[in-house]
Every structure is written in structure tokens, then in C-alpha cells.
Amino acid sequence: MTGPGWLSVVTAVAGKDLRIEFRTRSRSLTMAGFVVLVGVLFNFSIDQALVRPQDIASGLTWITLILSGLIGVGRTFAIEKEDGALAGLLLTPAPRDAIYVGKVLANFLLVYAIVLLTIGVFGLFFRLDYGNHPGALLGILAAGTLGFVALATLFGALTASTTLGESLLPILLFPLLVPMVVYGASASGRLLAGRPVAEVAGQGRMLAAFAVLAVGAGAALFGQIVEE
Amino acid sequence: MKARTGWLGITLAVLGAMASVGTLWMVFFWVPTERTMGVVQRIFYIHVPSAWVAFLAFGIVAVASGVYLWLGDERADMAAQAAAEGGLLFTVIVLTTGPLWGKIAWGTYWTWEPRLTLTLILGFIYVGYMMVRSAAASPEQGKRFAAVVGIVGALFIPLIHMSVYWFRGLHPDPVILNPEGPTADWEIQATLYAGLLAFTLLFLGLMTLRYGVERARHVLELREAA
Image 1 (cartoon, rainbow over the protein chains, first blue to last red):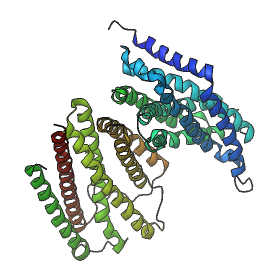
Image 2: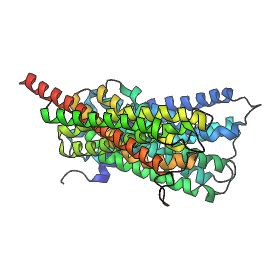
Image 3: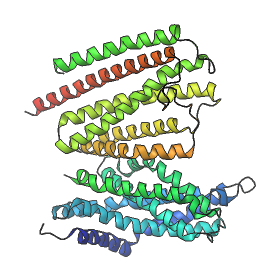
Image 4: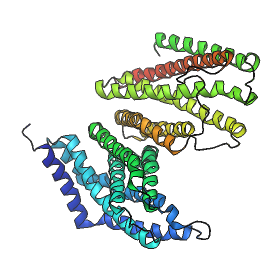
């Protein structure tokens, strides 16, 4: 192949998406606002006489990741529709899987930044104690975020070209997120409760498998979705 | 519809219907009432074969989708579509009979029991599969999109299965497919096998007929275009 190398396509696509985001801040600002406001609403949804916020914070974090991620990743191909940007990208000799991985990388960095904000905001709102194993918690969330973003980017490309648009995305995505929520919420919940890291190693491995499967399936099938 | 496809479909469906009637006779008049669960256990002979067909259909969807994306053969897509519609029908039967039995055996209509949960998720994947097909901008795009959803769904089903199992287990232990061999009485086994045969034939018949309809539509479209 005489075109650009695989890795340089990945970094070029990711760099382009991140540069657009850095200049417009359209997705990051809406996602950040969403996360803070959802934290406020969650706070008022918990009757503290019945349940401690710390006990359900782990699950709320994952649900917030999914919902805020939908806002961000759902837009990623709406941007590409303007001025036929994606069509131009596909005319280049860039391999389809490299374009996909580039988009996943950019979306991952964006969503993970929002996850970090969620951790901070929820920690403040719900008085969570991250003191025990912050590294393990961040690793668990990174694996979950990567798997989520990989699936959401694949199905986002798909739903963007349908008549139903982004409203179809949750229907396709949510059933496949069951393993991520099961293992992710359990692992982060146990870490927040101060349990040892060894107790969540199995969940961590399953989340990693989830992420690898999602990225692999996406890279293999993305070409079928963007093909004209 | 090609005459051969039509006759095959009708033959399979009629055989399946006859076997279903036979199974119903066995369920209501022949098989002895199970000792611990009582009469409600008889729903098992409808429930388990439906679940088998629901997952068989999903396997067909995944394989046919892969063949379609690989070779671009329209017939593979039609087979996938036909299997998905039949599969959703049997998924609905599983999700109806399961809670009816559960209300009496477990005291609740719904519980997050792994196999029930997995079947519910499977049903949602089927629904997404059909929505994508109908919401695509062009029929060709719908076929490719549906195939992608079918394949990704099949790739994730094992992981979903492991996770819901890990989350919670309450389902009765297998009485047929367990490592020590079947533990159920032979009448129970015979009735279950009759049900499996009946529903598999019925499903294959319905699928073949649905496939025939889709082929006929395809031929008609080609003729109109010409």
C-alpha cells in the first residue's frame, strides 16, 4: 500500500476529531453539564432515610457513563455528515478499520475525561471515599469505557444513516451493555466499599474481554457500515 | 414463491403442526404429573422446546448474516430475516410460559434468573435487528446493517450469558443435559423430545415459508425494475 500507514491514519482521524472538539467544545460542554445535573437529580432521587448514597453510587456512575456517552458518541457521525466529511474520508485510501479505531480513540478520550469528571462530582455530592484503590477503580472504568465507546461508535455510524437516527442507538446498544454493567458496577462498588483489589480481579478481566471483543468486532465490521 | 420452496415449507409446517398436536396429547393425557412441582411442570414441554428454537434461530441469523456479508448472496439475507422473525415468535413464547410457570413455582412472575434474563436480552437483540432493517435508508443498506447487528449480537451472547449467570442463579438444574446423564423419568424425556421435534419442524417450516415469500418479493421487484 502506498497510502499512509495504519497507525498514522488512526492518529490523524483521532487528532482531527479531538481538534474539532477542542475548538467547538460542543460535545464536552453538553456532556459535562449533563453529568453535573444528573448528579444533582440523583441526589434528590435518594431518600437518605432509607438508603445511603454511597451504596448505590457505583451503579449510578455506570448509568451516567452510558447516558452521557450516548450524548457524546451519538454526535460523532452527525459531525461527519456535514459537508459530506465522511464521504471525503472514505475516498482516501485509508483503511476502514484504522478510521474506526481513530474514531474510537477520540471518543474514548472524550468519554473518559467525562468519566473522571463524574467521579469527581459524584465523590463530592455523595461523599464517596476513593482512598482505597483509586488506580484499580480508574482501570476498571477505563476498560468499561473502552468497550462502551467501541460498541457505541460502531452502532453510532449505523444509526446515523437510518431514518430513526440516534433514537435507535440505545435499542441496539443497551442489550449488549449487560456484561459491562454487571461486572463494572460490581467491581467499582466493591472497591468503593473498601474491599481488596484481588476480589475484583475477575470482573476486571471480564471487562477487558468485553473491551477487546467490542473493539475487534467494530474494527472488523465498520467497513460494512460505511460502505456506500 | 418457487414451488419447491413452497412445498418444502408446507410439508415441514404440517409435520410440525401434527407433531405439536401429538406433543399436546402427550403433555395433557400421557405423561405422569411430576412429583415435586405438580401439574404446572407440564408447561416445561412447551417452554424448553421454544427456548431451544429461539436460540437455534439466532444461530441461523448469525451464520446467514456472516454468509451474506462475506458472499453478498441475497438468499442468505432472506434466510436470516426469516429466521429472525420465527426466532422472535418463539422468544415471546419462552418469555410468556416462563413467568406463568415462575408465578407458581417461584412465587413471582419475574425474576432476574440467568436463562430468563438471557432470553429477554436475546428478544431485544431481535427487535433491534428488525428495527435496523426497516429504518435503513435503502433496502441494501438495511440488509448490511441487520447483518452487522446479527453478528455482533451473536458475538456478545456468550459474554452476556456469563455475566447474567455470575449475577444470579436460581433456575432449576438441568434434568436432561447434565454431565451425569438425564435424571428425569423416561416419559418426561419422551414428551420433551416430542416437543423439541415438533417445534423445530414447525419453526423450520415457518422459516422456509417466510423465506419463500421474501424470494417471491425479490423476483417481483426485479421484474418491475426490468
